[in-house]
Length: 190
Image 1 (spheres, one colour):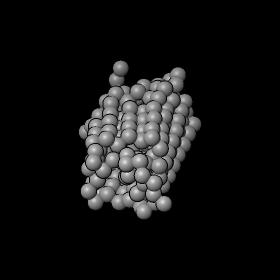
Image 2 (tube, one colour):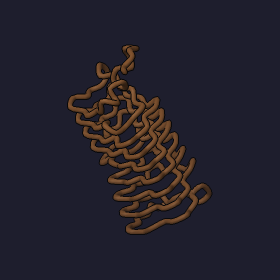
Image 3 (cartoon, one colour):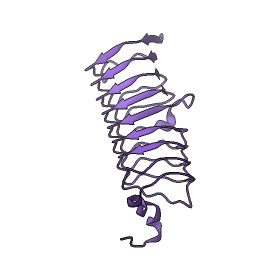
C-alpha cells in the first residue's frame, strides 16, 4: 500500500473505525470532531497538526510520529505513547481527558498539559523537564524515577510525587500542593 503525503488539509466529523486513516505523513493538518477510537495509527506521521474535539481513545500508536502536535478537548483514554516514534516527539494537551495513558520512558520535555485530566497516567522514567502541568488532575498518576527538573505543578492537584524517587530540582509547586510531596510519610498537614 502506497503512503500518502497530505499538507494543509482539514478533516471534520469523520469516523476512521471502518475506513482507516491512510498511512503516510500529515503536515499542518487539522482533525476536528473525528473518531479514531480503537483504530490503528501505527507508522503515521503527524507534523504541526491539531486534533480538536476528537476521540482518540485506545488507538494503537506503534511507531506513530507526533511532532509539534496539539490536542485540544480530546478524549484520549488508554494511549501508549511509549510505542510512538521517539524522533522529534513533541505535543501539547489542552482540556483533554488523558486518563489511563502511558508515557513510560518517553522524552516529553517542555510538554504543556493544560486543564486536563491525567488520572492514573504513567509517567515512570519519563523525561518531563520543563513540562507545565497547568490546572490538571493528577489523581493516581505514576511518577517514578521521572525527570521533573524545572517542571511546573503550581496550579495542578491530586498528585503524589516522592522527591526521593524523582528528580525535582527547581520544580515549582504551590503551598497547597506540598501534601502531594509528603504523602509517603503519613503525616497530617493543616
